[in-house]
Image (cartoon, rainbow, N blue to C red; front, side, top):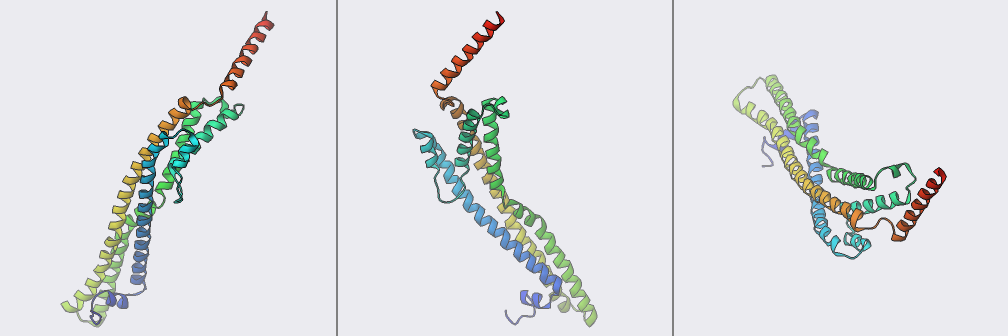
Length: 250
């Protein structure tokens, strides 16, 4: 009721700067957590659709057509990123064999490149979850602090007036307890959202790992890393070098 001496309006009007600061902090934490929950849930839904299209990647006739399967105007696609990083790793290793990483086998170089792409995607998926974890862990205690401070403030006011009847005590103390309820109301959605998003992210990362294993097999066995003519020239050059060394020793 607007004219009630108890309730949220009375708590706000009768509270000091500490109570108001705690209430504003809890409100900001609630807004931040709900923003993260809504935006990350939308992103998870979009990535699940991208994961379903990953099967279509293997039903095209060229790598370029496969990349176009992942074309989307909605932003970052970890499956396309994984395919592009794998192709870039293969091309870079083949073209720059004289570099230091040329001493690493092609399979190991590709494995590390795909693993690095998955780590980047995992970091992208987990962005914002620390906000939910922090809110879920601290909001109840912030609300409890507001309650303790509010009860202390109410008891000091009652002591100064000298009126300790139940109607004088119940109102201020009950209003102070509202801060604990505020803290729980902020923390519970944050904890539930964190758990749900973490579980969804694990599912997406599992599909990314499966796609990475398929790409690894494709690049090493299904996709030639050098043209047949190049391999023939390399074999001829190697044979000539061995022949020259044998002649020199003789």
